[in-house]
Length: 86
Image (cartoon, rainbow, N blue to C red; front, top):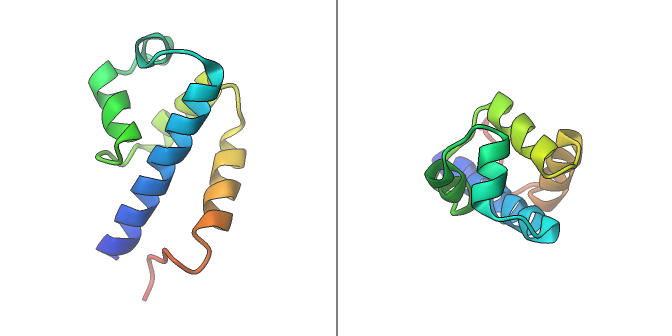
């Protein structure tokens, strides 16, 4: 289960970073918009943090994409690679 969690965090980190870069906004600007410290946002982009659902929702809003899009993309990318139930 720990491996699955790490894979998910790493893939989510890549996704958040990619979408942020597409916006052209800095971590400072976006973290300010969602009332999240820059260090936490940075840790999320490095795969060091596992965000709460509400935090992920706020991040998706700041990136101007639906949270469902992130989740669907993660499901597709991790299909068969990351399961939490043995």
